[in-house]
Length: 161
Image 1 (cartoon, one colour):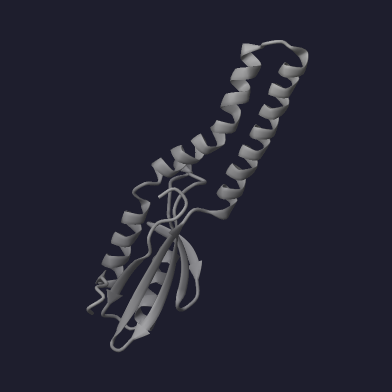
Image 2: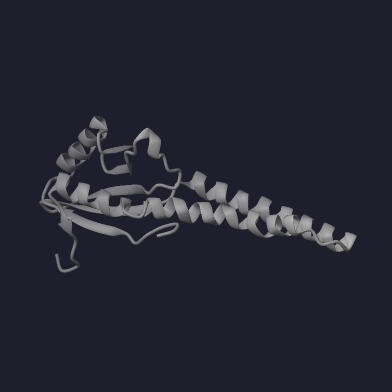
């Protein structure tokens, strides 16, 4: 998952009110997860220690839907929009700088290995930072789903349910 991942659906035997109460109680404790939300919609992320902050961490968008005698829990995982904007601007500035450097070298008919190295590596560093951040966050969707399954007594939703 670089930018998004597949949607995960769970089914819980709890009512929507009880499921919402349990999610909100977990958010209020703040030990494992943090987030905000309303009765049927939550935005959740895994709580990280101060020394392990990751701007590219996974955010879970959680929707609760009432079904007869149970609740459908729909989980959608995304990366923060601020991180996407950062990487896009970083790449744009890097690519523009690289074009200016190469153009200057061509106009002056000179070859500068340092400038050429910078021109090649700078635009690639933004996506590289993105990949490293996403690699660090690779287990977060699994952890968040496991947390919800435990907290809501849920199981994976089968289309035959």
